Every structure is written in C-alpha cells, then in structure tokens.
Image (tube, rainbow, N blue to C red; front, side):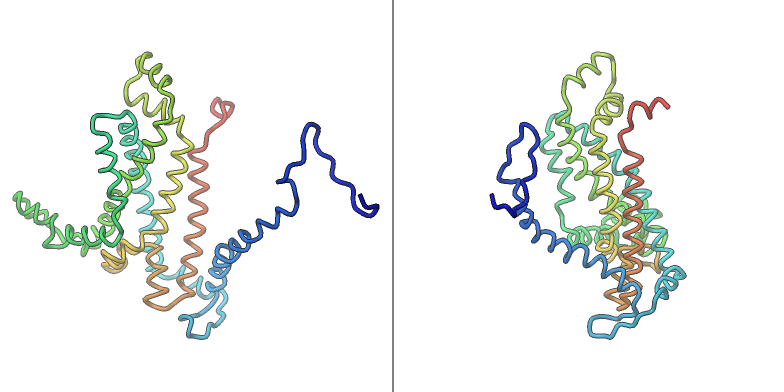
Amino acid sequence: MSPTSPPAAPLAPGRRRGPLDSPRLLWLTVPSLVWFAVFSVGPLVAMFVIATLEWKGLIYEPHYTGTENIRHVLGDDVFLDALRNSAVQIAVVLPVMIPLAFMLGHHLSTRPRGYRVLSVLYFSPGLISISVTGMIFYGVLSPDGGANGLLRATGLDALTHSWLADPGTALPAVIAIDLWRGIGWTAVLFASRLSSVPGEVVEAARLDGAGTFRVMWQITFPMVKDYVRTLTMLQFLWTLFTSAALVLLLTKGGPGSSSTTLSYLVYEKAFAQSDLGYSQVVGVVLLLLGVVGMLLIHRLLRDRDPGEQTR
C-alpha cells in the first residue's frame, strides 16, 4: 500500500468485503438520479413556477404576476364548484368502493363455484379503455338511450331523465361510472391478497363459532389491513387525479360547472382556455390535497400498537 493512500475502513467483525461494497458502484445510480431530477422534480418545480405566470402557451411570452393567479383562483366560483365536486366524489367513491370490493374479494378468495369466471367478469370493466367506457355510458344515459328505454319498456315513463344534462344528476352519473369501473377490479386485487391468509386461522375461527361476516371483518381484515391501506391510497389518487377524461367525454364539466372536478379544471384552463397560470395553481391545490389525503388515509388505517389500543 502506498504511504500516501488512506487506510481502508475497518470491516465489521465477521464481515467480508464484497464486490458490491466498492464506492465506484455508486456512480451507477447517477443515470437514475438524473432521470428522477429531470422528469419528476423538474416538472414539479415547473408547476410552481408557471403558477406565478400569466402565460397562454409556448408561442406566447410569459409575464410574472406573483400571487395574482392564486387570488383569481380562490375567488372563482368555478374553482369552488370543482373543489366541492371533487370532495363529493372522493367522499362517495372511497367509502362505497373499498368495503364492497373487500367483501367481493373475500367471497372470491373462498373459491366458490365458478370463481374463475367471476374473477374475469369483475376485472373486465377495468380493462375497457376510458374512451370506450365513455361511449358506452353516453349511449346508456342519453335521453333516448338504454336507461330511459328500459324505464319506458317497464311502464316507468315518469322516471325517465336527461341524466347527463341535469345539474342534479350529472355528477352522480360520473360517480356511478367510477364505481362500476373500480369495484370489480379492486375486488380481484383483494382476492389475490386474501388468498395468502393462512387457512388454519380461518378454520380455527369457524370452529370457535365465527360466522362469515365475523371472519371477514374481525379475522381477515386486520391481517391484510396494510394492503387495504395501500389500495385505498391508490384509489384515492386515481379518483382525484384521473376523473378529467370521463368528465370530458360525458359532460365537459356541465351543465354549468355542476360536474367540473379539479382534474378536469386543470385540463379545461390549460388546453381549452389557454390559461396556464390558473391551471397550474389548481394543479398545486391537487398536489396538496393528494398529500394531505394520503397522510389522512395512512393515519386512519395504520396498524396500531397493542399499547395504543389499550389506552
């Protein structure tokens, strides 16, 4: 060893230096770090910067406006309607979808007769593209569509309705389609996780006299609570950030702003009205709501220590 070279770091007792301990291997992480900085951190920073600009698009000159866009957004009735609609959408979708999907998934995990066919049927709505889904339900919910046709055929003409053209039913229709698309897909994911629950535990609970619902909610649910938390977070983000496509295809945010959601408002302001500053302020609001929602779901569904449960 050269007299000027630093001494090698001592190894822990019983541990040999392996080929992966070389500091040179740290350079292999540089491409992934650059990729993350350019395509993840970069757009995030750009969103906050554009939120301070008055900018109509790439061919126009941007002008710095400071907090003017924030004041404009917070004082806009359309934004307040979009915020309320997104809150209603989340408040309905998650409490309905997750319990129903868990129960369907638990049923599938017991492998009833024809469970493979049921799995395919449950999973199929999630495989249909959003454009095809929009086309199907536009035909079903239009004034002369399938829903009203079925009501007329059964003599319930008084219940026929312009489902997508009425401010009172446009948003509920979008929420119902979200549930149709997501419940079965989430149920199959739950069934996959529940299949790993030890059968001995379930059998012991049944021998102790536990019924189906008690086994479901008091035995298997606590054992997969971490997975329930993960799927709830994913469904929360999916509902919050991806409702724009369905709203665009079915209602375009109307009538008025009765079905406008925050994600659709980002699209509408950026691409239809060429107001990038406004759209990115709404994007920042979406980001903050996503972070707060994730933290709240994690807190509500976290695994508590036995000491906390006895307090």
